[in-house]
Length: 492
Image 1 (spheres, rainbow, N blue to C red):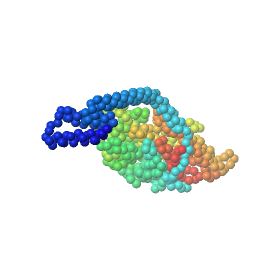
Image 2: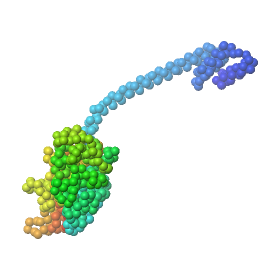
Image 3: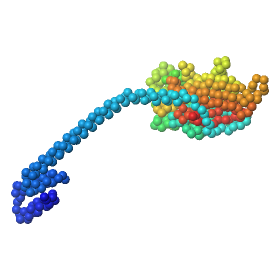
Image 4: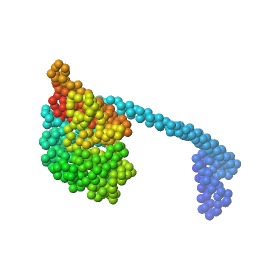
């Protein structure tokens, strides 16, 4: 039998011959051509159909086309069955996916329990690098108090007050520093604390009777463009009197942009921490707006809300007449009270375990315990007495943390001897949110290298520890007669 190409060629030749002779195609010939073109295909049955049409064998064409129809019906049936099977599979899978609604909470519960167990696990500390200059006398001492903000990116921002003042030694330094997630230090600002050398804009000196903080601030036009900036609370002159209190300003904007908060106009934040606007130089705490990332206070002369960003102030049209109105304003937003750190604070206060009285944690022979933060409505932050710890979360909100500690120290003196024993000590720290979420548990042991010397000042040895990177600052104040022992560490 002739192939499709031969059949088509025969019809084309026949068509051309008729066209050249100007002879019209008959109706039958036109039908043959039309049918052949329409039915042209790749299957053998279609080929046979076209041949049959071309050769005029209509019975053969009908049979061939019937075979094509049967094949198509068979393919359609097979496709339908495939769709039915696929639908059944999809239904089965959908039923399995529906079970995820029940499984997901269980998985989260397991993950939360694993996270809690890891947080509860007591971690050991390993020093990374020294960030101070060690020396054999008190001029190398550093304060054991700190204000820390732990960023969720693993970085830690510290305000480190001076141990002493009116000198050019390391002990008189006030520093604002950043520790990265690898334990490297960057000193953002450093100055000497001085009671007799006053500067409205602190540069080489910072006034003894003032406070400061390192704060995550946005821009006026871009509140989410956040960077850490030093903020000062300063006096007008070399005078500690309440009447000489000047107010608060961002270091990069200068003293002239200061805002004087309305005196004793306070409100309590969502964590139970009240602002402090007494105008006393060592009692400063203002609101931080977690939405706009700025400091917020009521300006004393206008009673208007002022927002302080790192590139300037915004004086809003919101007037606050009394503490009730300020409390309503705070309750309607998302605010955290930020407590400033005294520029000079040698040692924070803790509880002496033997007497259960609070006292300055300065004795290497005593055992201490206590907390910095908010527990059962009791606030121990700032006021020239306490350290302060905050975190800046993944959601870019500032939250206070509870830093709880207990320390033990074995004296270097032994009964019947004259100080030949190597002193030993340890401290354990629990870091948690105000709501009780455990973020980390850390432990450190120290032993003197020299007989007759103590192991150091243990209650504050773990000065700061970032719960995201587990990198922090370690300093026993003095060990084996040396001072200036601060070094970064990693907890594992």
